[in-house]
Length: 194
Image 1 (tube, rainbow, N blue to C red):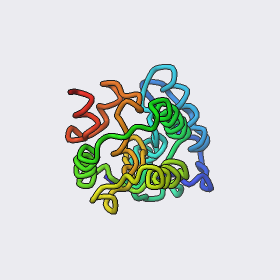
Image 2 (cartoon, rainbow, N blue to C red; image 1 turned 30 degrees about the vertical axis):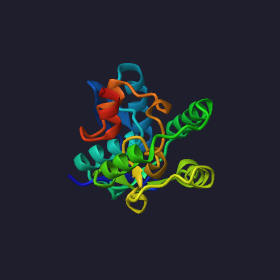
Image 3 (cartoon, helix red, strand yellow; image 1 turned 135 degrees about the horizontal axis):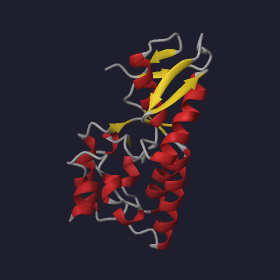
């Protein structure tokens, strides 16, 4: 299946009647459709994880190939506001734990898993964890792995993997539900289960 984003410069030439979880949406534009889907999913439950709009656009454009549908590269992860909130919350927890890191052997094992993971993708739109944190780690702790050059970002959570592999798992708010989106081979899932 092709992946898409919708370019809002192209409106709908006519209103479209669309279905979301059994609710009928009469959409005058893609942006209007997104807002209505958000309301329904907020109320009834549904996919509102980071990048949900991209998945919605892909589903929409595979059904209704309109002028605004533009093929895109799914192998890039965009950072959302909730990702930024998670980053700052995790950094507060890390600071409370006096900036402790896992052992170099644990970080190396994690990096080995991440480097071969299909969810290891470029992450765009965040200055914080992809640029600031690796510099802090290198300046203060000298933390690195032999796989640093292969590590990008996690397509699921948006974290910069060069940094994440060194952090205690306790800095993240994982639940069994949140981990279902990670591959079974992911070290986060494996460590959470043990």
